[in-house]
Image (cartoon, rainbow, N blue to C red; front, side, top):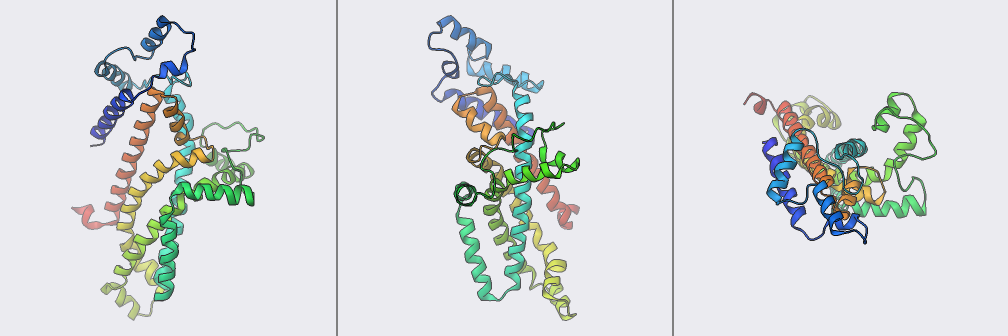
Length: 323
């Protein structure tokens, strides 16, 4: 299914970007170029044949690991993706971890308090749920970047820090090598985009997990543990949570794919050098090879997330595991 899905994505994006108006060659070539120069460039980038033949040629090259060269950046597409993808992965993983922590804490707190307190938590959570990630991003720019400048507004790391990294996973490498000052600077640059991505997802996790906990708390095994004198917090953490986390995990996997998509706008707002920011530049420049590589990369990430969630849900649910 993953292979068929990726093939379908490849076909759709390949056709769509070629039928919409606009010519990438006209955007990159000088106004005084001759017709022969334009034709030569079109042939160089494989844009001079029918769409079907272009797709066949591109697919054969892609299966060999060659996604072509970017029209706007004049670099190999895979090299560009390998350079930018780690930044987005670190941002998305950090946002997902923060969303899980915040959402889980809100759900547990909403289960512990009385009805009035639970309604207040639901109301606040509804506000977080109603505001999309790019609104949070703009709010953080105004509040935490301009009014009270606590965090850097743009970039991934302070340009004044002249550090040679062996990989593009800057946060992971700086923590692994004990460069905690560098890691602190990287985290400061990631703070606002991470919060912007995490807060809407945290609201979704909190709502679903709170409902699942409410159902679990009236089950017989929880009532038996309460009769034995177990505290409410311990009941939730030790008895109810493990059964409530299954449906929450499944929905979180779906929402995580939207979180990856949300990086496109959020990275642009903070000039964060990931594949989301790169995707906007590729579309503006009508960079066909780069757009195709980016869309396939996003598709592959979505598929891997769904597979990981399916395996995790099966591991937590013995009925699915043995079925």
